[in-house]
Image (spheres, rainbow, N blue to C red):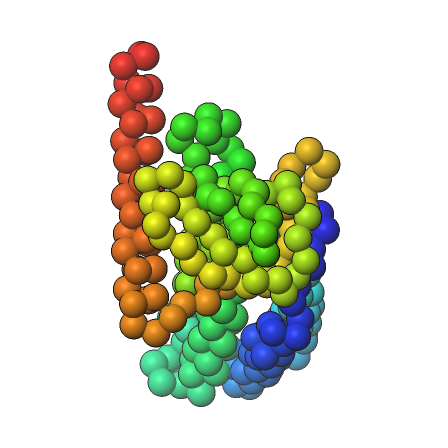
Amino acid sequence: MKLDLNKLKLKQEIDRNGVFVWGALFFGLLGISYQNRGSSTWLGLFLEAAFFVIYLLFLNRLQKNLSYSFWSFLIIFLIYLLAKIVGGAILSTSSLAFTFSFILLFSVAYSLWSPIFYPIVSWWEYDFRYRDDLKVKVKLNNKVFDGRLTDLRKEAGCIASFENLIIGEEVDIEPFEDLESVSFKAEIMSKRKYSLGRPYNYGVRFLLEEGSGHHLFKNFVKFWKNERKLKMKKKFKNESSDS
């Protein structure tokens, strides 16, 4: 997989996530030290601290590379922290430290939960009639080409297209025929290429005008969600009729 990011525009988010991971590491080690300070053996403290450091450094590497396996390892670690919080005394120093570590890692997850960093593409659905996407027209200067809007979250989206575009370019995205009068300006923030034969996945940030632009986009999001529900109902209806 090849991945390009608009590191200049996303620098603040990337740097903040790195600081939060280091902060989670600090509070986690603080919690481990307070939780084990009454223990007579240092071996358990050393092993748990070593596990914490190695695991978080590995997790930080995954989030920097924007690997999808980041989410699996993060969920496991958040469960581990929750067990530490629940297992400790209420409002104890160790529980509070683990809570801060949990909050910081959760903040990283919330920041990355965006089509710009991790687009959701329903590769498992081979029938295009039921895929969670919409046909769109993408306009760049005087050029118009087809694409598919495969993800829409947090005023950002993912456009799948075979057209080779450049990070930082601004495009106009126009949904398919039923919504021809609707058009949104967006900036390309990321670019993923999984393998030969598959389209590029462009993470875009919508550039919405104050007032009417946000209102129009909210209506479009509702339309997007309704379309997904209708496709799901249609799929289950057809599967039940076939059986």
